[in-house]
Amino acid sequence: MTRLLTLGYSPCPNDTFIFYALVHGLVPLAGCALQQRLEDVETLNRLALDKRLDLTKVSYHALGRLRADYALLRSGGALGRGCGPLVVARAETDMARLRSRTIAIPGRLTTANLLLQLYGAGFNQVREMPFHTIMSAVEAGEVEAGVIIHESRFTFREHGLFQVLDLGQWWEKETGLPIPLGGILARRDLGADLIAGIDEALRESVAYAFAHPQEPRTYIRNHSQELDDEVIESHIGLYVNDFSLELGEEGERAVEELLRRAEERGIIPKCELPIFI
Picture 1 (cartoon, rainbow, N blue to C red):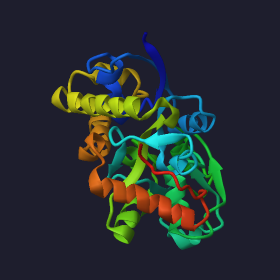
Picture 2: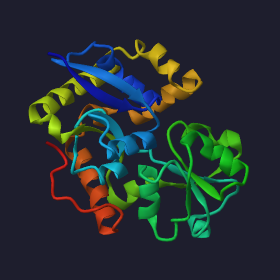
Picture 3: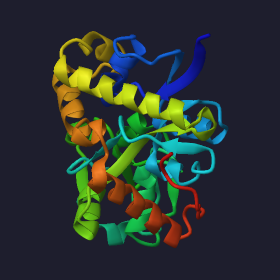
Picture 4: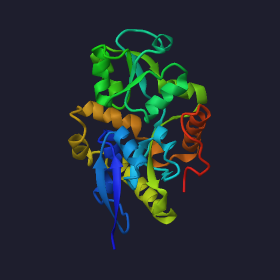
């Protein structure tokens, strides 16, 4: 009997690249069929909080509130160096001047917002909005600054905006570790054996995409919100890497350090359960 699993991931090029082989049946996931749901990452975070997805991409910030019900997979995530969120503004400024000012964020449970809060006190005057509208809001003066993610880091200068801070660069200097952005979770009640099989299938999906990089291109473009090919290539190159195949020891330490600091600041609740099954 085939088991139907609900799977959530974003329409961004890195996710459609990673999941292409898995959702098209090009790698085996014995006894299971997948029902896909493509949403922005903050929507996925909220769906996971409601336990509405069996498998899902989430922000690592959201993982801090999901550990009782979900376990982290070792494959398929976004973690690396030089790929963190950027704080941008209409004019050159610094972070000290942005304290107590309104800053647009792509969701309260995003890692982008978590990094902003970990950077220092006084940045809690935030306004949530879809990530693709933040640059326009900053440009129009609706907010003092914005925290941008995904392909926005390649296009913000076209909006006449200035980089105030690279939060990923700050994290790397602060910790010496890569920045964990988003990971793939599986509901703990799926059981250890099935979760291990899913993790292996996801690793094979990433490997397939690396081995056949042109094959997923039509699927990626169909979901890429009219991005041009150059931005799509840059996006995949930045967010899909060896950590996407396997977190490894360094990746695991980065995730643990992010959650430890968030717990220490009281941003996420403490949890005694292991991150992985």
